[in-house]
Length: 394
Ligand code: PLP
Ligand code: TYF
Image (cartoon, rainbow, N blue to C red; front, top):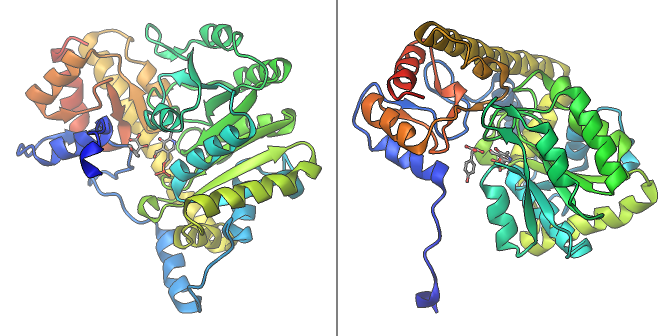
């Protein structure tokens, strides 16, 4: 049997991690995988998460199974964080999942069950795991224009023009904030326009939110999903706690199916629990429980907010420092978009050959589409990167 297996394409982002590790140069700079790093290059456990872990060790008295959909306290805490009071609890079916990826996978499976002919529309470009999973599930997919390579902003006109060709009942996958890989995001008024458009065209939003708190702040970053939850008949949300709680390897995610009609929620809830059972029975609990403890304890929550805000503003400072360094070196404002982008990533707009040149000449590792992880920079590496960008003729 095994001889029938085919070699699968490697994940470009993860392969880059291996290449970086194998590079002997001491001044190499890792701007690849989307993991937050502090100025020392470490990905620390957040203080509040560590404190919750200590407390959990003391009070946890069983490791018996939770519910199939995970712990209701986790659903409540994350629903409030993401949607605030824009919907009531009885409008939302929720299931804990292994990370945000698990939520995306389960959400797609729900779409496939409910609407096998629906096309899933993806932004061009998007996180490579979106098309990869959709293809694996054999679902119809299409792309809508999103990134304007010229301005490095959102091609909003192109986006709506392309989505105008979608058929009623199709699903539109949207990044809730901090678009991966470009860093270019919809403004609040564009979100409102998208919401009106989707509703008029009877398209269903599926929001992937993996970086809430990394862009303009926890509330501002949730503007899109909140506005959609208020205005659309129904929608799906896949959330990840990997980044904003720093619990990457614990695999804490949440799938939410939101409906204006609370009568639909019991069926939705049964479906998301069923999907968990088909795929892995019970979802992981440890990370979800830590997140719940942090959100529900006043002191831990306050400390988490402070640390998260430090992470966010630190990345903004790095963006500005890099944009300034490039302004100085190029005598132009053509890299100012770096300071306007939000989240961990910016797409620089370099060619693959230029990305390769930066790697060879300056030991800079970014994804071949010229996505760079801003959090991989620090005061020492910003000038190295700026020199490399100029030397490569970007
Ligand atoms: N969605 C996007 C756009 C991401 O960048 C990520 C990456 O981490 C995820 C979802 C899911 O992450 P995880 O499965 O680690 O929670
Ligand atoms: O885009 C990123 O870098 C993060 C981390 O298969 C990641 O989202 C990358 C690849 C992958 C899973 C997570």
